[in-house]
Length: 454
Image (cartoon, rainbow, N blue to C red; front, side, top):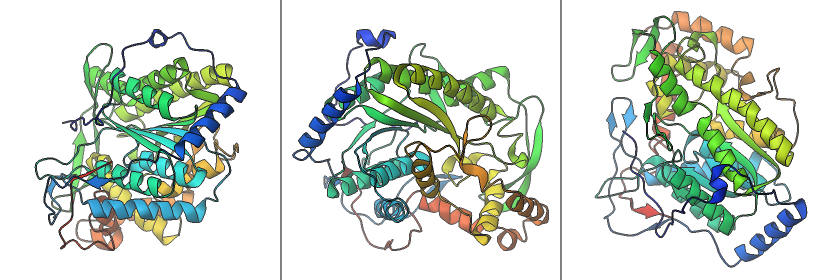
């Protein structure tokens, strides 16, 4: 089930313009971009970002974590706030601030790699950011989603440090949210230098056809059998998945492929919202051979192949019109709620955490995105590219020494020695941290305000 859409108070959905028909405006020349940027920077001094606040419509409450299967159904706001503050601290320690005030649009900005991208762009590059995401607000005594609290904490930190941050909460696949984002960009931002596409959703309602597409996590062509961790019983169990149908493959491509990314970029270009030299990145994963049947060679892999085709097409479009570029960044496996639902992946991640922590190469999303923004697009370096033109942040994960260690432990691990041979304990804690639980420094016995906004 998709989260409830909550839109900002007073938000206005624009009617379709002539430019929505695919006829792009003439890109602004560099001098005009600079002048517009200076005007917006000047006006920003008297118009700070909105911070989070409590509306006090709900009394403070003690929040205990609640799970349904592998899904966490609530979140702790103070834990989420501390997660944001610590990520900001890691960016400050690893990225010397550069001169200039770039503008970054992050589509899928409230959790995981998208959230890390927004934090690294703002606190590492000094960027003004617009984040687009789909999160549930607090209501009737229930907490908001973790992504909602993450965003409120980010807005508070941005206001404190004079960084412009705006957010749009709604279905990023829809034309209405694209138009709402365009209106905010026209009003409050200079032309965009960097667009990060990091959407993760199980379902897409196609904005033009109205068709509902549900993604499937299945192999293609033949059944796949392996082992995984049953997260409820904490036992290693066999798992067999039947191959996807052609419809399931097509639906997964519709949800996780490149069509929506292209729609966003074509809209931004048509609206004249992209700066000369604008870059866009989308995130992907390849992984080791043990995960290929369910991932790279499965339905998700078909969608990622479509994403790569889209990247090449967008690269040609942006290069010819703006001197810009588009690329895929292949990132390392990390603990996410989605990862917990993919067979094989919880066991693989538990082993990977142990191996990479042991040899000092473990990275969280924020660490990888710091490397990405510091060493690749804004710095103009190409040392991270592979033969296909993809940025390979996953090189540490796929190092032969790491993968040989993973393969050895994979064969040795049983239900009885799961905690001894793997870092399943670290996997569980990383999962809980995503929702603000088991975070160092939080008093979980103390009542907290849950009715946040921004």
